[in-house]
Image (cartoon, rainbow, N blue to C red; front, side, top):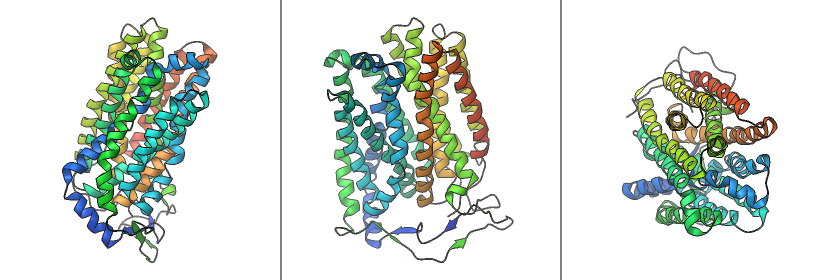
Length: 440
């Protein structure tokens, strides 16, 4: 359980105005209290939604060779299969808080799952453009889930935020693990890569069914066309803690702390999606069979659950998370260095180091969005900012590594660049992990 934190001399000032100070209407607040009276339904909904936050992406990596071969794609063009969803995860993220204010968080989560179902099914349609358009829809749906989940946790579980973050992060990675491990078996069982990818629409459909009653409960307090939250007109006030100097950066985008969290999110996502896109290929390029490479990749993804559960739990008990940030960056760096030295011989060891480090990094990034803010609204705004710029930055990773690999014909330079990214991640973690809060 995170310890109570009162604003102290290290809290960052942030201007609050009528545009950002939105509160739920009394009717919606009553509906949310009714929804929280059914915690089991809410928990099941969070877990099922979280299972879908990476499953549709992780299942692509073991099949990327077949997909590229089917359409005759080069390494650079083939990397777009994993890059386009990331781009749209970044582009769609800013719209999530706005839509949630207008229609309610539950309604947008349900819509995101429906959008995800459509994108998964469109992605396996015969024309090649459908592969990329469907990927854009998949990325957009996942973006809404990614952005709204920290705010939902902060709103409904304010005193158990770190534990709930660990739960949904672990569920998210669990979905990715099962997806990666079953991609090739499903391909064999269902007659090709299209059947394997399409199967994940069923998981999204189950999650959508669970969110339907929650959406109905949450919207019960509003009439057609009414927003779920109303602006509270207040005189702009700068909340400057005693003993601090007013900061010229009065908006979230001017907060150094907000940018440190954002860039930490972006660099750890870049490492994660480079591994999703290229780790099996690195192993097969060094003589490993496709099925063995898929198992090692699934093993790495499975061990992410260890880091994603342990690190947020520890982070909630610590006032500063700087040590944890450096530790997860060091674990990933050690695993990547191993891929440079003996990629096939030590594959299971390197996969374990990278997996635990990745799980800890994503869990820490999501936890810092909660711990670095004082309320659900600011948490949702920071989540939107971090995931907008973070995933746009992350999208560069798989594409850039594909270009460098194709240009050099090997993995030495791409992996060396990834080591540099791990170093930068550790430096950013020293800033983002400080005991400070963006106050609203």
